[in-house]
Length: 318
Image (cartoon, rainbow, N blue to C red; front, side, top):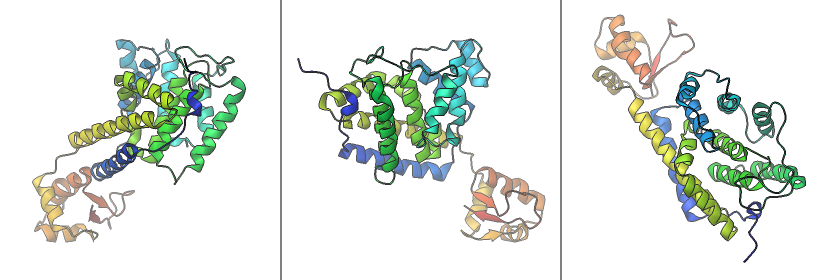
């Protein structure tokens, strides 16, 4: 029987399937940016927290789940509170900076990081590096990630970073949690819309498929099967965001459609000009039936959004 291959020594290659997935995702993200700019909300943080902890075998009870979705702390589950806070901070921290890793460690393990000393970690079947090599491997991984900017597609790089963190297993516990958190941060830095991606839930649903992809990568000593599988899940998640965007998009009224049809692209209009354009006399009617719903539907914008009541305010078609 041949000796198992050490995952952290696998080669990194890009297949045509990976390239096609990256292009497909980029196209869909372009469509998404035209319909709505998503910002992660309380439900996104709660879903990500619940799903990523479920992958660690930590099940949140219904009552605790309700507290989680309300944004309340759960005294009996400090790890849940910590992970929730990490997701809230994620968009404001650069994952390419090692300070991001330190922030994770200080939040999840305030009493000390569970450093592993042996080459074995529970539930991980492959050979992992000696403790003495972990720090240099992590530094090398960060160096590779920063060197890959502009050369390797950010999503591919994120998936590779995730694979390597799993392979290195830097801690004695919760390595999967750390790797998934870093993965989400990397893809979110590529497109802010992806901070809303239900990726952790998809990883939970497709856990067996991901585990098999990891095993396939180890078997051929190449990360491509795993990266391909992860890109498929990201693509599926972007599809979910597109469906959510269409579902939540404000319905455009016939009056707003009329306004859009008469405004010229790129030109700002005063209220007087819009009244003349639409054949109206009442400013109140203009604001109530045209401008306000147009702003809410994000089809027009103000010249001075900081001061909506500015007497020189003008409006432009988006």
